[in-house]
Image (cartoon, rainbow, N blue to C red; front, top):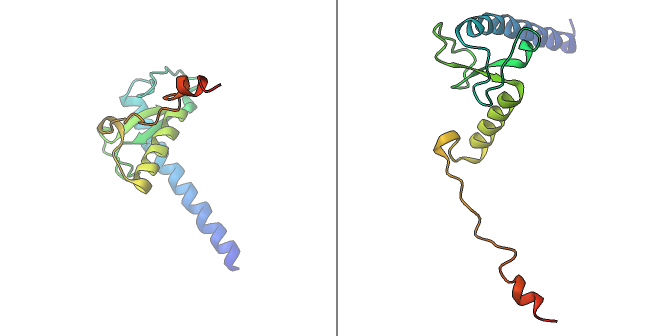
Amino acid sequence: MTQHSKAHQIVAEARRNREEREKGYREQALKLFPWICGRCAREFDLKNLRELTVHHTNHNHDDNPANGSNWELLCLYCHDNEHQRYEEQSRFGGKTGSESKTQAGSFNPFADLKKMMQKE
């Protein structure tokens, strides 16, 4: 077996394992929670249920308590946004979610507009 085919086999097996693990907790979460995105409140039915995902609130995909305390149902878009925010927080620091306070910028590009208009 070549190095390339062995690596391909390992990746394929890891994907299969992940898919099997996801089936278990996804099915449980769909039974526990209403089919509504926890962020944008979009409602789902059998036709679009594939767009509703299970988010692990502590970002540990191996932490799957049967009571669903580490799960949140999010639509694809909100789930992607949540992971983007988490990644940015991990890389650049700071707080996320309700902990963060948006600071208004102090630069005002129009502060001297009246003065600049009068220079003619």
